[in-house]
Image (tube, rainbow, N blue to C red):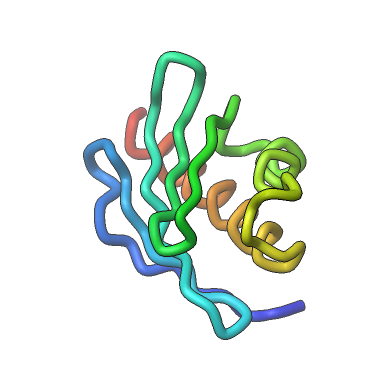
Length: 95
């Protein structure tokens, strides 16, 4: 178990923006809906991807673990769990 922190910058309107602090690193996440599901940009790591959903930790991890991506396994898990938690908040706000 490791501690992580999520600083919310924008969760009321898309694109959503948060900063995740985990493992002595920082991940700026910009995400929202697109025609194929959801987009995720991590500009400070110069990467982006398309996700089917924001609450499927396994699918998010798979998409972020491509060999050409600059993230280690621990970073991917922290981002995946952060998106899962943020998805719950977004769903509550929409209802």
